[in-house]
Length: 155
Image (cartoon, rainbow, N blue to C red; front, side):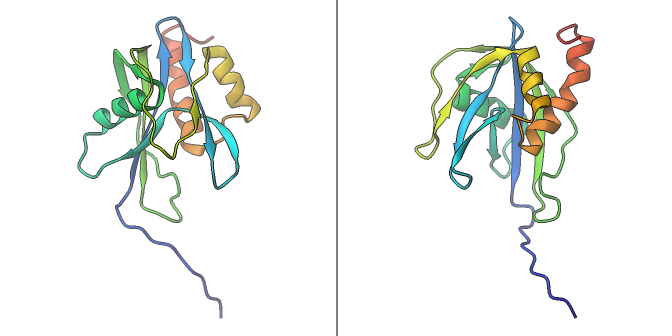
């Protein structure tokens, strides 16, 4: 006989994340301290969406909060479960084109975040080197790549 403990959190969490690409072809990343790991991670802007909140509005709010930016165009990708074996959460990914910084970021008291701006090529180099490791952010960047190639922003 085997016993297994499962954590089940039904339909409680929805997350949004966006790959913010500026008109100059740079990406607004974040470098965020994650307390449980006791180190910084390079990530895309994103966070939790409130139940019932419009997901595009939530993605735009996270862009403003984390990097102080607004996007001209937001394109959604199919959602994915970040931890399908543990929780029924879903991540809703976007590419935010024509992004520009319009104000200073506004972080929660618990957040320790820097906002480096790198070239699009450098962002994908960080992905390929394994520097960007959050599964939802990796998936978002992989989903965005064909659109960036189609638009001539990546080779």
